[in-house]
Length: 281
Image (tube, rainbow, N blue to C red; front, side, top):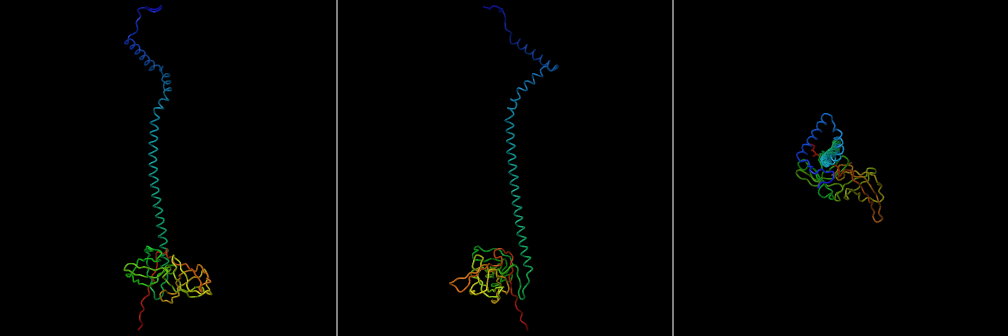
């Protein structure tokens, strides 16, 4: 039963009627917005309200793009760093090689300035290696019997006596250094002329043996070859006195010396070869 104020036979609008009404409303809005821009404010309001939603939907894509760019730049920087490190290592190797060549050239120039002694011939040789056991105090040269070398020949560098050829092979030779314990070298003190016998003590050092306690010798004195053994020419620098000590139980001084030649540094040396004597008629 109908309530007061309500029509008894009222009917609701059907779906078709509601659709037509909404179509008319939509068409009216389109016409009004097209000709009079009536909905511009509504559109702006909705755009402002939906701005945070748009930003939130774009955020994952922006973060992904930024992370991709970061990793790409990181890989590029790593490659650039590796390239720079390799270039730096190459430049350092070049600088070291240039310094080594400069030092070798300086040694060769100094060797070329040495004057040939009368009755002797100088054969230039290069030190190949020091052998597997440095304690043996021997080096190997790149010249041998093919260059006229033989056992017993003295070997010098730009500073002093290096040693003596002990073994000769066809293309190489072995030199026993003056610091070898088995190597004896007749010398004299340059300052006083006192003669003595220098012997190797190993580890790149030497000692002057059988010097009486009253001998005038002091640290800093230079020892030269005396030439009395006819093996080493006289006047070749051998060593410099580093320490002189006296012992109450021995009649001799303990004289320690350091070789003047670059036993473990020289790469170019000279081998002194005696020229054959020509018999006079």
